Length: 149
Image 1 (cartoon, one colour):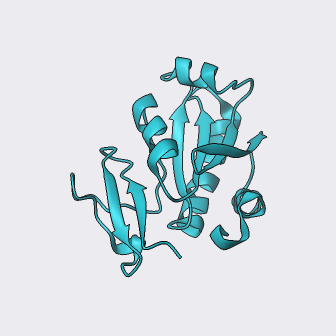
Image 2: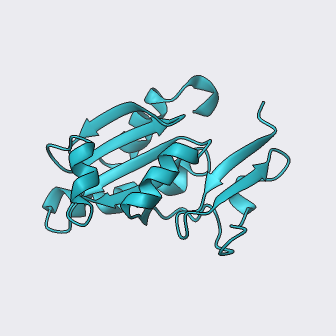
């Protein structure tokens, strides 16, 4: 059992140490004072994306999307609903592939929407195409180590 978790704030990218004795859903960022988990996936820039996957103790599920993409817009409410179900066990974030073309290129994004699941700084799962809430939750849990599901 971890004594503490590292949780990256999706608003300011501050790295927060949350003791195991504290409920992560009640924790606030020490830097900007925003709740660390809000049940709402934040749209992050490239630097915050890198910090989320590189520094966070919790798995991170990224929705790579673009504003002009119909399936992306269709999946957005389902991804938000999945955040309410999966947080605080999993951090959900969104990455706009138009605004962050270099990051999307480095990730090898060929089609959107694409979800990528990271844990311990490594990619552990990838899926392309729109999904509904239950499919997102099931896919995520199926790809996590048992202790994290």
